[in-house]
Image (tube, rainbow over all chains, first blue to last red; front, side, top):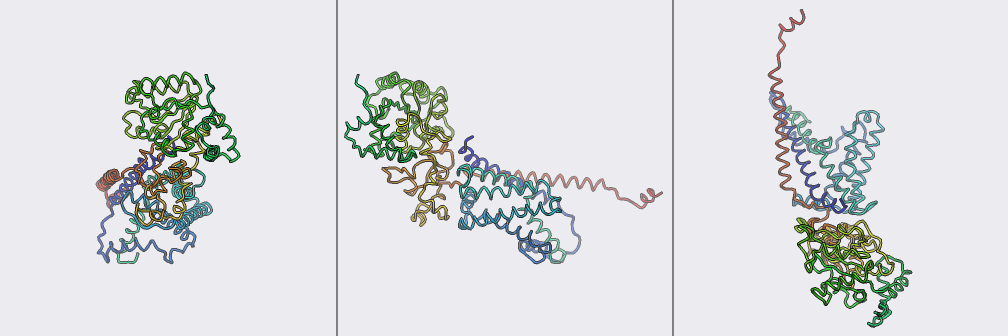
Length: 219
Length: 365
C-alpha cells in the first residue's frame, strides 16, 4: 500500500471504523454502567438529587482550595494538560473542518500560534506527569501497563500534529497519515481503557452530587 | 541516404534564434534542478543530439495531454523541440491514418530498434483480454507489448498512463491499469498530471537527450526535479495558511484577499508537481493563483481521494449511517450486559440463605 492509498484509507474507512468503534464502545460502557443499578434508598429525600448532581458535575471541573491538600503539582499539570489537549482538539481550524464534516457544525478557530502554544503546553505537562509517575515511588508501584499505554496514546496525536503543522521529519502526506492514525487509535482505545473517563467522569460526578443532594448535604 | 540532421541544424533551418534556443536551455536546466553552470552542457548536448524516434501511443485517454502540450506555449521553443523529435506515430498529430499509420509505427520500430522512446498517454484496459479499447483491431494491451519490446525507455504522460487516472477510478469497469503495471523490463518515467505541464514533458525528453538516461525518480516513478516539492511548499498563499487565514467560500472576503484555499478543498499539501513554479499558459498562472484549490491531479488515485471541495483534514466517507448502527449495536450490547448482570443478581438473591439463630447454635455446639 502506497502513502497515497494509506491516506485515502485512513480518511475513509479508517475514520469510519474508528468512530463507529468509539460510539459503540461508549454507548456500551454507559448503558452497562447504568444497568448496574443501585439499591433503592428508602430514606426520605432532603434535597433534589438531579440538581445537586448537575451542580457537582459542573463545579468539580474548577479549582477549589481543598484540592491542593497534596500539593500543587498534580493540579497544575492536570489542568495544563487537559486544557491544552481540549483547546488544541476543538479550536484548531483544521480539526473544526473534521467536526464540520461529521456534524455540519462549526465554530471560530484560534490562531495557529495559540494552538501551537496549547499543544506544546499539553505535551510538556504530559512529560512532567510521566516523570513524576516514575519519581514518586507510591505512584510508580500503583501504575500498570494501561497507565503507560494511555499516556502514549494521548501524547501521540499532539506530537504528530505539531510535526504535521510544521512539516518536520517526514513529508506532509506521511505525517498526515501518522497523525490521523494516532487519532483513530485513540478513538478506538477510549471506551475500553481508563481513557473512558472522558465520559464516565461526568457520570461519577453527577452520582456523587446526587447522593449528597438526596441527603441534603453539600457535595 | 542523407545523414540525419541534428537539432541545431533543424532549429537553424526554421530560423529559431540562438538566443531563443539558449533561453529554452536555461529554462530546462533550471526546471531539471541543475545548476546554471550546466546550461552550456545542456545546450551542447541538445545541439548535437540526433532526433530520437518517438512513438506516441494514445490509449484510454481524453487527448488532454496532447492538447496541453501542443496549445500551451505555442509557438515557442518547447513546441519546436517536440517537432524536431522524430515523432513517428501520434494519432492526433500525424497526417497518416489507417493502415499507413500503423505501417509508420512498425517502420519506426524496425529502423530504431532498441533506441526509440515510447510515450504513452491513457491507461490500458486489461479486463476481458483488453477488448475495451483497440486501435486498428489491435488491443491497447497488445500494442503496448509490441511497441515497448524494442524501446529504450517509456514515458507515461498524464495521470491515466502514470497511475490509471479516470478509467482506473472506482469501479474501474474496463480493468484499466497504468503503464508501470505492465512494463517491467524497460525504464518507465511517470509524467503525471491531468494534464501534465508541457515544460515538464519537454524537460524530461530534454534530460534524456542531454544525459542519455532517464532522470532521477521519486517513489512514484516521477522525475524528482519536477515532482520533488509539493504545491503547498511553493505556493504563494502559504503565508496565509501559516497565519490561519482561509477563504471559506469562493466569493468571500478571504477569497478576494487571496487567502489560503485549504478549507475549500485545496490538495496542495499532498500534491507534488511544478504547477506553482512552472505555471501554465506561458507562465501566466496556475489553478490556485486563479482562485481554485489544487485538485491533486498528479497524485495516484486522485479521483477516488474524496471530493475536490472537501478539506484534507475532513473525512471522505459518510459516518451517519455507521454511527447510527454503532449506537444501536452499543445499546444492544450494553442492555444485554445489564440484563445479564441483573439476572445474576436475582439468582444470587434467590440462592441466598439467611443464617438463623438455630444455625448459629448448631455450628457452635
